[in-house]
Amino acid sequence: MKRLPIVTLVYVLLWVAMLTSAATCNESDGNSTLTIGSPVVPPSPVVSPSPVVSLSPVVSPSPVVSLSPVVSPSTVASPSSVASLSPLVSPSPIVSLSPSASAAPPSLPPSPVVPIAPPPSPAAQTAEVTRIIDGDTIDVRLSSDGSVVRVRYIGIDTPEVGECYYHEATNKNSQLVAGAIVRLEKDVSETDRYGRLLRYVWIGDVMVNEELVRRGYAHATAYPPDTRYSALFSQLEDEARAERAGLWADCVGCGNPTPGFSCDPAYPGVCIPPPPPDLDCGDIPYHDFTVLPPDPHHFDGDGDGIGCES
Image 1 (cartoon, helix red, strand yellow):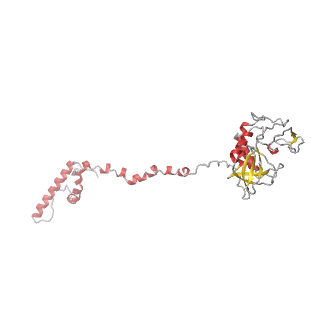
Image 2 (cartoon, rainbow, N blue to C red):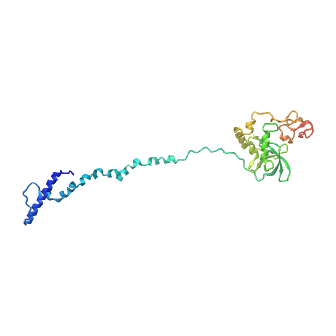
Image 3 (cartoon, rainbow, N blue to C red):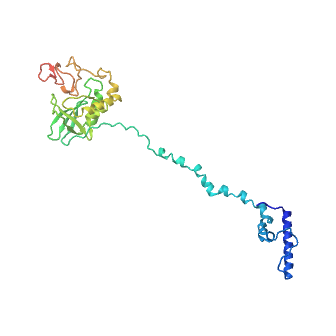
């Protein structure tokens, strides 16, 4: 509403006061009709109290400080205004990334599976190891009848006397089974041509044949028809070779006898060490070789001067 100047307001108030005074005088004379000589101010709009009341804010000091419509914070702090901004400050764009953040990390390649032979059957023989011959041969006392027999490990071959890593392989075999109670698992054949039992030898849950190949003390060698674990032994040999374990680090390209090794003169043409230990034909890689007295290993059983005849 447009505000009137203060001077105008004063004139209006004076006119109202004069009209009120004249009306009062007429009423006191008993005349109920209002007679006003001045034609300037129309009676109804002027005498209506509403304009007077509506002007009270004007003369009130409140207009001086009443700036509420202008400075009212409603347009700024109105909840609706703030709410209308919610799409801008909504964290939903960040939350919308949660699907990618919650996605499972890329799967890692599986760890290589180390092959392990299954445990032997309950029918495996039990025996006590009484002697270590070399890396793949032992003597045992059978629990069934107390007899002492020689056992050749199936499917592997350790260095022979005079070959690189012979002593290491023999010592490792001794560490594994010397004096231990072992189980003897048969494959197909009972014995080899030298009368030795052919067996997979177990101590606890460890197959000794397997352990020697895994650690690089033996080669995997298949001797049909006894090939139950040939694939396992071949895989273990490949892994040992790749890791340069044992003889695969020390003996590759080495064809010389072990340093400090001496050959017994009773066996010219081959190199076999003197006892101890006492060796049999199954313990050496030679056959049909010349034997001279005194033949300390007794390779020439029939005395014809030929040892380990095939």
